[in-house]
Image (cartoon, rainbow, N blue to C red; front, side):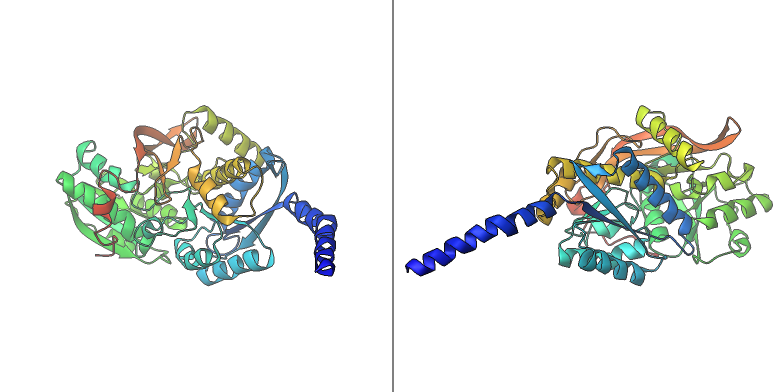
Length: 406
């Protein structure tokens, strides 16, 4: 018995002498943050904007959170969900990151969801906006700092009817979840207000010529609603003007239609286009003015929503890590800290999270204007504190099916 006690004492002594200092040293070492975005391929510019926004915030805090250095590890998903999943596995299982941020593709967001839940890795979704990530198929370990596809479109459907006075709408939309859910949210509130979507025209994400779709537009429409993103926005608006329809049937759309990632490549064809989103580089608040100034000084251009959302994502992580005094060793505590953050001030305005992990935030109705020789999304109306469930009761809303192609 005495010998056993002696061995126990020696073991404890060695633990205190060797093992404990090593564990403490690891706790005080760099915090690894894994970041996934499309740094190559069709959506490379989006990925670059995302990484630039995140890097800008990290530079402001000198890559330090709660006294611990940040090891920011960027991986390229190349616009492929399978690649995004492979990169997530690398970051979690090889790099041992305690926190993930990204990706940018909605399909990649769905692909990563089961994995991060199974591994219990706190994950911040900055860009993936597929509705069900924070609705019917809610991810336990994901906090979304961006938006849900239908979130800005719910108030916009009402606005199009009550303020813009439109009664008949034609939609030309990308034929996948982004288009279905954006148009679904708009159509629901627009038709509940008394309007009617009289025609839907679907186009693939690979569309390079919109002529076949533009010629189908029902000329009885009061306006056309366009849920597009990326280079497709530039092509559509240019061709729409070339067909002589711009002055006859006004264009409205999702916030991505005139996002600052594409707006500098547009001309007069974008003037007057009205869209809803939770951000505009033209927002008149102190935090946004400082953000835009710093971003332009570093990257030589105005920030897109992709830049802002990743900048704000890093601030979210910073506040959560600070609240934990730098201890990110327990995933459940990190997740709770992320969910508990309230950003009373940010470039886009105040942000808080609903019980499903989606932000409640302002939605801005923006109109493209030329100011100082440059195009901008001027804010013409603000809907404060918009939930992903709009004015509906969450439990009733979730009984309805996800917005789909039909």
